[in-house]
Every structure is written in structure tokens, then in C-alpha cells.
Image 1 (tube, rainbow, N blue to C red):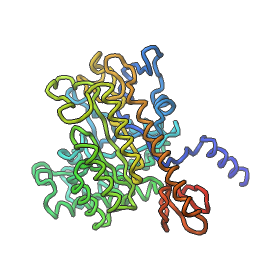
Image 2 (cartoon, helix red, strand yellow):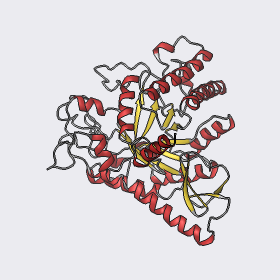
Image 3 (tube, one colour):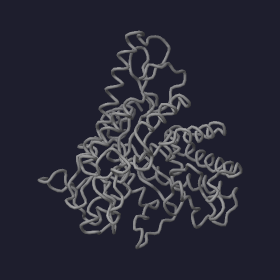
Image 4 (cartoon, rainbow, N blue to C red):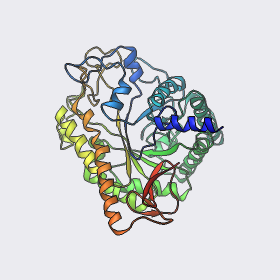
Length: 422
């Protein structure tokens, strides 16, 4: 027994079994990467480099990502118009295992739909459409449980689970009823609460160490964010992390984002915030020359502008103690404009150039998030240590705030030393 325990300890210490828990998460949603790999799309780190055969390893080693996100649909069916609908359970489990094998954190983004779920689209999966609301809640629970059991059994246990994607106005809409009302009706919100509680129950039962994320896209609207998460609190919704989408061409300025983050920290001091989606253009999107990022934002729609946006965003996020994660959406977009083997058109918001397959400067600027967050944390700790030694029975956050209830998977100070709550 002692030998077995020692072996496990050593394996964890060297990263063979247990990967390190991260105080801050940096990553991206790479849900289309296997499709690009199947198409043999080249990924270059520079104009003179050879192809990066292992993109996940490259993102970890060179871009300093420590976490990756993958979306999951219930019954996805790719079409000629939308070939992106391929992320079924087997697809996501296989990709999730690769992420875990690379010693990275894995964020599972469950859409609870057969197609894209967002503020204007939250459609019931085709196999659930005839169910009553009570039966839908049962399906939420049983589906979530089945997904997590399958992933756990196959080496792809998620570290974070989004129970819904951009659920600002609810989920599982019935066509022409809930969706059109945008959840302004109290009864629809009650229905929504029931679904979230069912999904959260399954997460806690199957993957108790995973953090539950509630994800909305109202980062540019402080009041909307506060109203949403106040409602979650008032109705005892079980979750750990506030997830936000922030795209400056839709969600207003960094000043608006800053106000939202400050207010969320004041109103919900026990809830960390992660920016689970962000992106910016390095060129015009194909087929839409009328869309110019410069009409909406202060950054150019160029590789340099994209890089500057990332640097400015990281600088802003470093100032907010409650922000613990940043994820870029669709960084793997690559080659669509040249060969169109994966997508017919391109967005030009990825982190590889569609024409040259070369990594863009913004990819390497993302690591500023970790560098700046850690630097701010060190300075705060030094400042706090100037007034208190953090000795005795009290436990402190890295921001110097004492807490009686440390959260799992977070770093704290106690007796003058750092430790991690498991």
C-alpha cells in the first residue's frame, strides 16, 4: 500500500497522472481542429518553419495555453451550408482525451442543442421536441450524466463544464414560444431554473471536482449581467464560475467590460469570472466587405490590430482580481480562403493566416494574460505581507482577502505559505 501511494504521489508530481491545477487559465476553443487535421491543413509557427504536426502541443509549449475548450452538440448533422456541426459525443471524447493526455485542463461546452446555441438560438434537440417541461428536465439530467460518465470512462474527464452556451435568455426554446418571448415571462425563467438545476446535479454526481460555468454574452451590458446572476443567486442555481463572451465589435468597449467586471466582483465576490470567448479580426471577413472593424472598434482589422487588441485586453483583465481565465474562440481557423477543404468561407478571426498558414502575432501575445496576472498577484501578495504575515489559522486569497470557505482548485495563503485547495 505504501509503495502504491508513493508511486501515485511521484506520478502526480511529475505530471504522469495528475496535471497541475492552474490558478489562471489561458486557452482557446479548438472544436474544429480534428477537421483541419483530417484535411492535412498545415500549421506553421513562422514563414520558415516546418509544419506543426501536433497543434495541441504547440499551443501548450509555444503559446503557453494550459487549457482548451470543446463544444458538444446532442445530435449534430453537418450540412453543405454548415459543415461545422460535427461535435458529437465520440468526437468530443476523443479530442478531450488528447487534451487531458497533454496535461491541459479541459473545458466542456455543452450546447444542449443539435446546432449552435447562442442568445438568438437555443433550440430543443430533435429527439426531445415532444417532451413536456418535466421530461425535458429529466433529459437534461440523464444526458449530462451519460456524457460525463462516458468521458470519464474514456480518459476525458472535464475540469470545467459549461451547462449551456450563451444562455442569456434561457435554453431549450420551443419554436415560436419561449424563444420569441426572450424569457421576459416569469414562467419561462422558472422553467430555465429547473433545467439548470438538473444539469448541475448531474455534474456534481459524476465529476464533483469539475467547476460549473454559467455562460452569457452580455459582457458589454453591466446591468444585464448583474440581473442575470442575481436571478441565479436568488433561485439557488448551483455553479462556480461566471463565464462571459467578449467580442468588442458586439460587446462595446474595454471600458464597458471593465465596469462589468468591477460590478460583478462587488455583487458576487465568491464567483470568479472567465472570458470563455473572445476574438478579433486580422482582415475583413470574406464576402462581407461592408464589415469594417474600424467602424466599431479602436483597433485596425490587421494582424497588428489583432495583436494590439489582445495586448490591451490582457492588460485590462490583469487589473481585475476576479478574472481567472481567458479563452480565444476558433484559434485554429486556417486555410479556408485558400483551399476551402474545411469551411467554404473564412471569418479571418483565427490565429493562423488563412492564406499562408502561418501563426499570427496575436497567438503569442495571449500569454501576456498569464504573465500579467501572475505579476499583479505577486505585487498584491507583497503588499499584503507588508501589513500582515498571514500567520495563524486564517486562510487568505492571493488578493489578500481572508476567507473561511476556500474553493477547490484554487490557490490560497496560510501560515505564510501558498497551498492549493483540492
